[in-house]
Image (tube, rainbow, N blue to C red; front, side, top):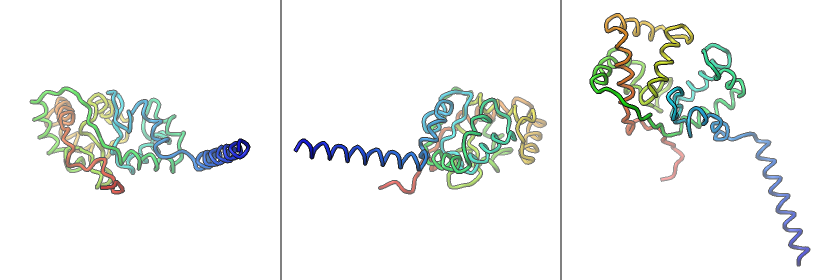
Length: 215
């Protein structure tokens, strides 16, 4: 009986080792790949630090394009260029789909309501055609960029990169930005940042919805 038990234990151990080896051969899962981003971008892509953007609910196409731009040096970075080079395009696609399915949690930060009100008007006039629904996640759309609920310091850093040609600014964005700054001055940017900091109603965005979830 003892011998039979030992044989069964050995068979079980061998089976477990085989399954483990098979899983390793298949490569890391999307979650395993995405978890490597948590140190800067937070658990499931929701940043808890003002210098890093939240990437939960991010458009997967935008995610992959952004990472490839970091790989190629087309987009300025401090460390992302080196990090991005560690992934294949297939792995980036897996990560993009994973983050797309995560619920977006807006950053909790202070804002001035008067600035928010002014920023709302500016957004409607200069930004809404590209950044629909106030810059919220819109998972049913394509090529969307999340501005609402992002950390204000990150938005400021990103805008500075655009203005100082460290990132390529789309022509339409450049025209709208020039028009706003000419009409309203540099303080208009602060009003927009306040609007995005305050715009945290995501109940209708559909972010985090997964069609495969059970009822």
